[in-house]
Length: 398
Image (tube, rainbow, N blue to C red; front, top):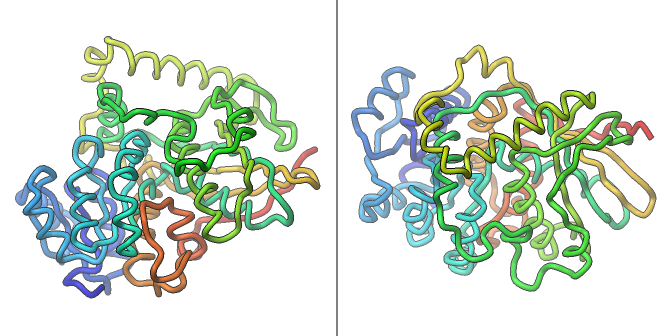
């Protein structure tokens, strides 16, 4: 695949898209890329403000001709234009039609299910890698579990993920949260195994999978857990990876079970944040959401550079095998939802645009609607390690 641009960032006038363009330009000046979106003047402003030397490509999420023309120019499209259930479907379809790899940062698993049903087989036949969830949704969960499973000997029974983080929400993320409440997902779009291939869930997995995370002590890690706001999309991605791993890499196991929650050092914060999380969810899915939405950031707005620099995430994974428990951690400094999401997304796109395709999981002819671990695997881990993300085994307390 040798097109005019190695990467085109679609949605570059948005908050995260601008971060992606800035990071790509400053870190990899040798990469040929363009920024794209529907508003030429906004894109030119972003280009000027960030001193970018890349071209501008005009394309509209609802204009298929412009999307086709854009995809014909790129090896990889990196899309940051959400909410994806509103603005992403035509673009993903255009990528498959025009032989273009694709990466996004969606956490809208109900939309991903719809795209899998429509495009997985065609992308697989063309050896195209269409990879959703390449930001904080859901790289730490998906790559963290992948790293943990591949670091232990013997059969894995289950993995639990526990996330701690510091960061703020942008207007785009908030808009996705509120608009998702009005979306009409396809049948089964919110199910526990919504992204799994057909006939890939065992009876034991069904019995042992419960997404209702209670506030409880995690003695092996010396902390507490409670509900995690991103658990719904993350768990679906990991469960799809587990099913797809049967044909790519180390198989997670026929009865593999995955759950995740937030992680706290003490019981008090676990209760406090969990109550706030439940209340936020109740407001978003209630008729009151239309009245409280104006009090939050608007699309295009986001945290300050100072706030993003002060952020971090630590994702711990407790692996249960026949020999007992082992623990692993994936961590990085920087706001996970923006500073780190932009880096993870760009590094994911670079895996597809400059790395030898034979080194990617499954080899050159592998494709489909894939997860970060199944589509990028160790190649992405290596690239993330090179920019300061850590993957390591940690000690269990008990």
